[in-house]
Image (cartoon, rainbow, N blue to C red):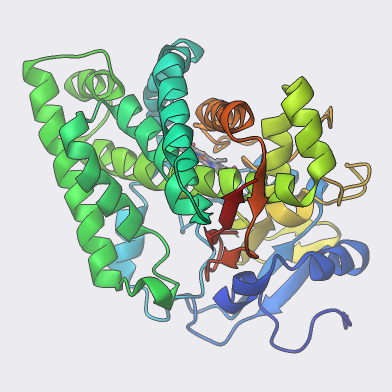
Length: 411
Ligand code: HEM
């Protein structure tokens, strides 16, 4: 079927698309006319022999795929890719060690272990320290006399501090963890001049650091997630590669996502002053969820069909890749009233910004919501008159809806 909104060759995973905007019009058109649509890609673009993927744009279909791992596998790589024309098989094999790229029963086994570090109690235990961090970050930004970049001065630090607290990285080592984490992301964007080799080297450094920490915790246990995981390793329930890749995944999954949620949230408030007034007065507890719906920092992940099946009335062949477009699902008018409105009192808000509710549903959701709450409370307390100084500069990425610079000024 011809879709007038999509010119020939249009590909949602082309980094040049997200570089400019989230393709909301195109998503709306597909949801209406062809909610499961084949998007061709030039052969070899994703390192597989296939020639495209199915774009899934309706909320109900994204949920269906996410909650049926027996039909739609994660183990053939969940990152919906185009940026790398020669992704090697051994890279894909290594990525299978990441929780996100596992299928049951491996996924169930590893997830049961690692989620011990994410209990409500362990997240609550971080709250006071993260609140002090958030206040200190905002107090430092408040001393800026002219316009400053909200991303580097405010949004960047709390997500990294939160991961460092969770893992138990000592203060003196945090600088290098921050540096490695930042180098692993965004190498789609030439402005950062980060090569794939530098990204891979940084990943290796994080894994080596994690292994070193594990050896330390074996000698001297502490009350942190590494000690929990080391105990599971000793019981034979988690192997050391799985451990290293899990720490690596935290450094990526919890970093750029939350940073972008905070930045998009700030931008949404700057462009919706009525919502900022409301927030400063009433602080609705529904705010963080609406920021994640509105921002949808992870634009998409993918699955691969394990057998011939059907989705939204379309036949999907075994081995076909299926792109789950969370940003589209989060604007689906079948589910959300006035989906294009930023409404921090929205309730219920069954958005898919943290995933479609299946076994891979975001493990760090409570931590992310806590961080978003803490930073906006701190901003509302200390610099409620923040103003935009320039339009945001967007990240060039295949799958992250990112902002790399948002210049603001104290009102
Ligand atoms: C998985 C989004 C913050 C750790 C995911 C998924 C999404 C997501 C879309 C995939 C869900 C699926 O495939 O069904 C986000 C967003 C965040 C955020 C938007 C911030 C606003 C965090 C944080 C952490 C974290 C702070 C931890 C420090 C993880 C992990 C997984 C995951 C470990 C993999 C779970 C699994 O495969 O079982 N996240 N995330 N995330 N996230 Fe988050």
